[in-house]
Length: 380
Image (cartoon, rainbow, N blue to C red; front, side):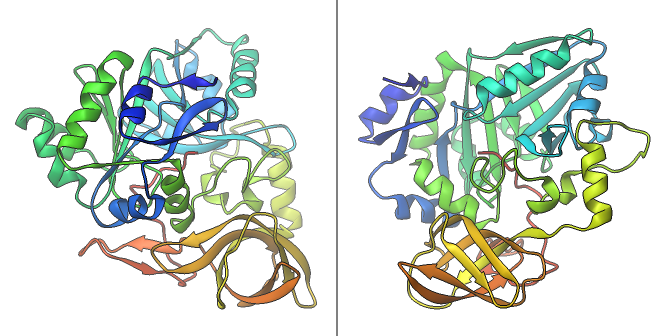
């Protein structure tokens, strides 16, 4: 039996299909993965993401440690703000991707992936020895992600007016401590919403309030198709220690300035940037009936081959979509090998689906200059 979150009984009561995920027993869906996907795109859904690893880093030298450990620069943060970053090995390979929140000058909170829990904590603790800081894993906390275009409206039935105003006033990638809650305007779906960290013994009560407000329970299956439509990487599939941020559509997460800031992996990234990146992560939209799957071969005429890193059927677009690592010279189309046959696919710059800021609707985005919604975080 795997580890259980504080909401395990709630999931069983809701007839969730439970599966093993990185050693945790987690809900895959509550009856229909596709319906849950549409709830989040069109209305509001809540995910139990308590399997994520929460690490509180405190001490006078904590900023110095994170400045060295992370490719993005925590000096950009003011109290209450968050950033997305990669943690690299000396070769520039991605040990993990994470969110870091600055709470005070001497207090930062890190949210790292559950699948990389052991190696992340070992890496953090090894480097922390050289600094005057303490690292505490918050195993006493649960974490909920409340996502969708109607979330802001529905939270009025969950929080009182004073707390609600504080929450709704949050800007994207900002967080606030509110009584026993830590509320951040972040997510992993491409929709607006919030992630809430709270004591484990309070999680079930909040979960029930959210469900009573007609915010629908959603499982990991919908979370994966939502993040893929939003063009968000999954660690272990779209990136790992064998690839760099420059090969993973994550160059924007590397803070090159100031030039004198040394961080682990910088030398390797500088060399790669100067010599040129030979492979990149692109979006594929299947132009024929079928479903794109991980590890399918991508054929780029006269340029070589690539591989799908994340593939699925998009419930929003009603098409097969994928992220694929391909030669950097790839053009507007390619072929994907499915069961021994080649199928045409369009090549785009992710995301596949973006939020219409005025109407809350979604559309396919093939614009190479399209930017992801700034309320989206990138966690797996």
